[in-house]
Structure formats: C-alpha cells, structure tokens
Length: 400
Image 1 (cartoon, one colour):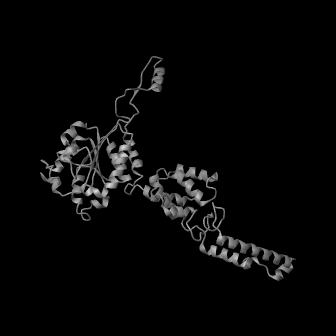
Image 2 (cartoon, rainbow, N blue to C red):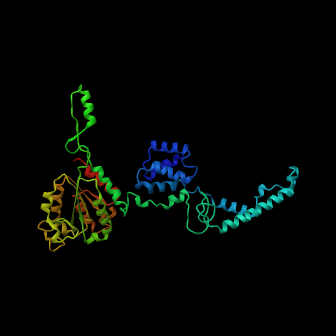
Image 3 (cartoon, rainbow, N blue to C red):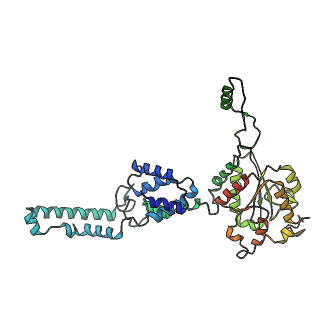
C-alpha cells in the first residue's frame, strides 16, 4: 500500500526502513489514521521521520506524491449546481416512467418543493455563517477534509495543504542554523563521548556478580570507565570586522554552547581575523583581554577538541606576512599561517566552522575565498549548518 510514497520518501532524503514501513502499515490496519489524509500525514510522519531536520523533506515528498487528490473543482461546481437546481437530470424520472412505476406524482412534487426549501435555507446559512470550532462543514472556520473556504483566514487544512505550507523548512539540515536550532544542533556534541576513553575506576556491580559466579564464588572485581562525559572542548571564535554580518548567528551559537551541560570542560576564546601572538578571553579583542597564544597552548593539553568559528575572510597578507595583522597594536612577529599550523600540531582534533555557505568558498565567485582556501589546507573546514556540524563532529571523533 502506498509503495510509491515509500520510494518518494527515499528519493527526498528521508531514510525510511522496511521495518518502519511495516509499522506504518500495521498502524493503518488498526485505523490510527482515522480514514483521512490528514490523519495519515501525521501518523506517517510520527513513524517514518526520525529527526526534525527531515520534516521538510517529508513535507516535500508528501506534497509530490499526494498532490492533486483534493476534491476537483469541476466536482465542486457540479455539486453547487445540483444544490441550486435540485436533483440532476439523470436522477429525475420522466412522467411516463413514473406512470409505469405507479408513483404518486403529487407526493414527489411536494417532496421536491420541501427539499428545495431546505436547500435554499442551507445555502443562506452557508453564505452567512461564520462556523465556530468546526461546527459546520462549510464556510469560514468550518471543517471538511475536502471543503472550500470563502474568505477569511484558514482554520483547518487538508494534509496536502499542510505539507505545501512547509512549516518545517527551517529544520532542514542544509540551511544556516536559525534561532531555535542551535541548542538542538549542539546536542550532537554528545556523540563525542567515547566509552573507550578514560581510566576504568568505576565498579561494575552486575559484572562483578557475574564474574564472581563464573569464578566458582571467588570474588572477582570488574571495573568500568565512568559513564560521565570526559570530553573537553575549546571554542575559538572570530570577533568583529567581516564577522559583524554574522553577529546574530554567532551570538546564538555562543549562547547555545554556554548552556550546553554535556561537556566535562568548555573553554571559549576569541580572535580577530587570524590568531597571532595573542588570543583574547572576551569578544573585545583589546590588550586588557589578551593572553599570549603560547600560554593558551600550554594551558590546554592536546586532548581538547578545538573548534574554530570564523569566516576566514581577510587580506592575504594577514596570513602570509610578518606584521600583516590588521590590528596595529598587535603586530605579529610571525605570519598568521605559522600560528595556525602550531594550533593544528598541538591539538589532535581540530575543525573550522565557516558561516559563509560552501558556494562562497569558490574563488571565482568570491574574491575573499582565496584566504578561505588557504585556511582549508590546514584545517578541515565545514559550513556552519546542521549537516556541517554533524560532519565536523564525525571528524572530531576520528581516532587518527
């Protein structure tokens, strides 16, 4: 049933498994969709979609597959004409036919007149009614799975209409993160917790009992690594200059990181354009907030995961020339690339998140992409999107 919809979902990027599809068929067999397209839309989404980032892909697949099954306009017009003129011609028998059927013509004529009066009354009610809470099948605010609305704001939408509105396009994994997506996206960092890291210093009660029984009753202690997350992350963010156009994005990112409670340690530092002799403990990159980059490296062991956030857009001289720093009060004794290489060598795991979309990394389309690609030769660089963050996390989890 609906096997074409299954393939449409897979085509749209929703990873539906056969087990989930059979579960949906079981739900439909139990009548959980209530024999309505809207019910099917919600039941199928609840069963088949595993992440809110796939909601928009689901809506697109639903719209593509079920589009066009609403009540045809011709059928609606025909029904309205029927109400206007009484029964359709094919349903009205001729007088000759009625004579052979021994039908009371006067009785039928009386019933038709009564029916016409009822229809006139119903049409007047439909034309003037403002239905409340779905109390009517027609009119503004009424409910009908295949009905039409005349004027006003919609109150009930068919499933295809809901899919077409695509309320969840902001949850897609291939768009820049939005206001309410940062915290959800940063929960991906929980995946960095490695059960194979750390010292086995926590007693495993069940394992000890099992091992002791297998050891003929002689006590045998079993130790496990602690369940708490031992992950340590250092976040270094570009502040000011060309990053001002991404200020809202980075502010939301900063808030989400600060509120994340699933890391053992989280340290945040700042720089402007590139990291040189000094790095900063506050967004204002001034002398009062500066510490030497050597002190920064000495205070953080190589097990920290380094995440740098910046657009990597600057003059080439800021990366390649001594004293090329744009801040005159922080003249660099060594080129910026030398300092970036030190960071890469010091931290075992490091990634760079760029708020500029990937298409902006093309030097033919963006004159500033030259420095972006220079930085990319040192750091694995990912777009600051949900999917980009997921890819960065996988890179940070790598053992090599």
